[in-house]
Each structure stands twice: as structure tokens, then as C-alpha cells.
Length: 356
Image 1: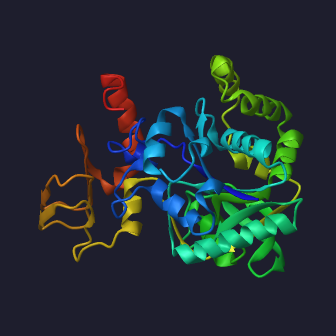
Image 2: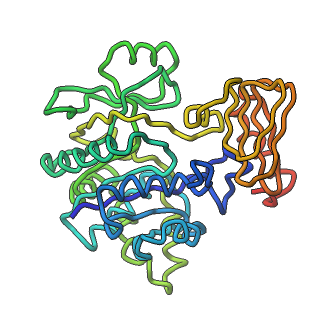
């Protein structure tokens, strides 16, 4: 059977003050009135039934996730004991699925991207599942055709062609500097690394056993005891002992065989408020409205965000981000969007967890 796991464990610090520890960015309802998590589920629900879709998230977010996705069976919501990056999230989910369906196929998908059009996404995911099943020894990744020399993404160099849109992976490239990213785009053999995957469960578990044996042993034990309340403290201690490491570093860069399926979609990583300029259509002055109630006079190139009907008004502003939350308001220049993480650290140092 085919299974899809949505990774929804990110905190979204750069989307503060709307994104908080107890309500991270994947739950913010600023995308056509729906959350990124809901959009991620709806895309997969066009291919799989809810019983085949799982979400792995922080334990503190399980209740909110269940409320956001009532279609998913409660047993398909996986609460990580603590945050330990994507390798441990993937490994834990793989072991839990294997306990139900040892020979199944697993897809891994993100909860913090806008992907359009949905029908192209669904077709690509179907081909990814097929590739993983036909090439049972391989790990399959979904590659995005670059639209710009982005320095914030990892890249995949495609190798020999195996079929329509399916290639061997020659190598992974970490986030490059601008001249290198420009070279990759001109070359035409590189794709953005989407962070989405497909593989047979025995294959990914074998790769953990080969390349991360100590981690694999702990994950196997955590999966066995995760739902035993009497062992909750022990499970937390075990999981907390694992190193923080991404699936790319832990497994993908070490795997013996990797394939990539080309995904011809508009793929937007919502990692900062400036990303909204790619999601929403700007007005004639270049203002982006992710809010229902905005008024401007002589204002251009700004980004306005609010989940409520609170009025956001601006006069004479250029290239500014204005974010309204119930108990906090952020104002900064668009060019300083990446410094919001720095601000959040200062807010926490001065006020504790009040605004976290």
C-alpha cells in the first residue's frame, strides 16, 4: 500500500509574530483562508484516501492538527517527543508505518510550501510512487526546475535518463553562492531539492541501518514504545538523545542509489514574509495584501498580513512589512526580513515566553 507522511514540525521563526510555538506557520490561515497544512493535505487527498495520509508534528501541535484535519484518523497523527530535525522525523514515521505495512511505499511531503497547479503535483507524486516501486533499491526525490538562481535551496544534479522525467541522481549540492547558482541555472542539469521523497519502507529502513545504525536502533525502540504511556519519559529521553540532523545529511548524501522525478510545478517555500510576494498578486502599486482590510495612500511595495479584519493603514511607506497579530505588531523593511529571527531572540530574552 502507498502512504504519505506530511512533515509539519517547523516553528517558522521568520514568520513571527503570527507564527508561534503553539501555532506554527503551517497552521496560519492566511492562504485563501486556509492553512498551509490544509493545502498540503488537500493536494495529497486528490491521490490517496485519508487513511493513507499521516502527519508528523510536535506533541504540542497534535490537538491543533487534529482540529485542522478532522478527516485524518487519530492514529495517523504522530507526535514527536521533541524536535530532532527531518532525519529523525522520517525515520520514526518509517518505523511506525512498517509496523503496520512492512512492504509498503512511503512518500514524504512538506507542510510549508505553496505548490501549483495541483493536478501537475498529483501526477508527479503518482510517478514518484511508481518509480520507487519499480526501482525498489532506490530512494526517489522530487526535483523542481529552477526559475531563478536561488541561494537558499539545495540543488540536485541529474544524471542518466531512465524514462520520461525520471533520472539517476549524480550528486547533491548544498546551498550555493550566487555565481554558482547562476551557473547551475545556465547548465540545465540541476533541479532544486524540494525536500519531498518516495521510497519503499524496507529500502529506507535499510538505509538507516547501514548509514546511521545507532540512530536506527533508537528510532526502532521509540516506534515500539511511542504509544505506551508508562514509557513516555523513557521515550522522550531516547528521542532527545538523537542528534539533530536533516534527512539530506543523514541518508540522502550517503545512499547508494537515488533517482529524481522532475516536478513541473510553481513551488514556493514560505520561509519568510517576503515569500508572500510570490503567492499573492500585488496591487498596482506593488503592495501585497495577505489581509482583508488594508488602506493605503502613496504607499508602494509593502506587504500587509493579518488573520483578522483589523484595519492596516499606511501612508507614504515604501518596501515595508507590516504584520498584525492579536498581541504584537511587526514593522520592518523588506530587506530586513531575514533579521526577524534575530528580533525574536531579543524579544524572548527580554520578555521570556510571553510572545513566543
